[in-house]
Amino acid sequence: MVAGASERTFPMSPQNSRIGFALVPAMVVPFFASMLYFVVLSESRLAPVIYVCAKLFILVWPITCAYFVPDGRLPKLGGDVKRYLRALSAGAVLGIAILISMFALMQTPLGEIVTANADGIESKARQFGVLEHYWLFALFLSVAHSLIEEHCWRWFVFGHLKKVLAIWHAHIIAAISFAAHHVVVTTQFFGVSWGLLPGGCVGVAGIMWTLMYDRQKTLAGAWVCHLIVDLGIMAVGYRILFGSSPDSVGGGGFSHRMHPPGVIFGRFETSLRNCFALAGGTHLPV
Image 1 (cartoon, rainbow, N blue to C red):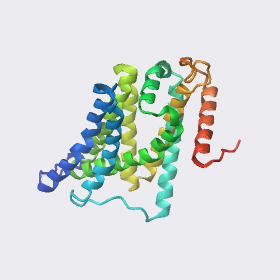
Image 2 (image 1 turned 30 degrees about the vertical axis):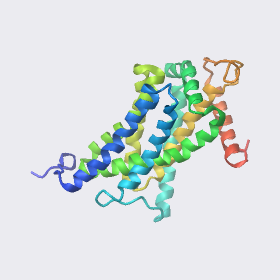
Image 3 (image 1 turned 90 degrees about the vertical axis):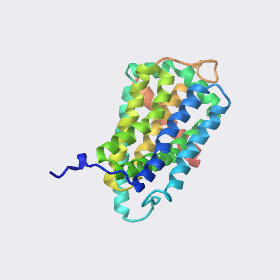
Image 4 (image 1 turned 120 degrees about the horizontal axis):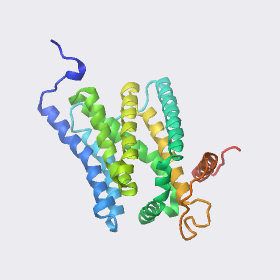
């Protein structure tokens, strides 16, 4: 009997061993690095240095290994413009849907947990030097860093896992490895019980983005979706850290009070206006 796609086996070979050698560091180094900069050395001056090194690693390691693994090649731009436009449109729609879900979750007990941990979020943001240049960091995280993560986790990790594993095994393992270092961060902020929820959501997003990449044959759709989601997360962070209350950052403390959905979305709109103003000196139309 011929095995189906989900039952395929891939014998060990020198080529598969080289792929495995390249993949294992990409899948585990970000997790262990996050354990260092967020747990073991969280109060050390080395934490920001380790964080930067981890981000450089997920950029440089896949590029280096592209010339080492069998059939390795870097993603190329060009080709069918319509395909890119379709991918970008699908990614934008999914990103906006996730954004709406995210703001809806902020009106649940999870939102209360997030807001109640503003002190810890502020402390880590101050340690990493983010508070003074919040929206510049937010733009980097949302635009450049999301592209670096797509390049690492979707193109490199998932793209090579599916060469040596059945496709759904590749989707799941790539998503778990992508979510692992996010779970470290969220459980440190919100505890294990609540922190696993947003960490698990990252894993679900990872599966959605590998599905998009596998179907669209381009990172464009997954990247723009990732960009929108990260921008939304940074907008939530901005509201928590720089709320208009007198006891917000810069005023001696934090407001732990939730606001109605209309106010939350209003603050998000204001944050986006600030973001566009910083990016290009322009303003969104009223």
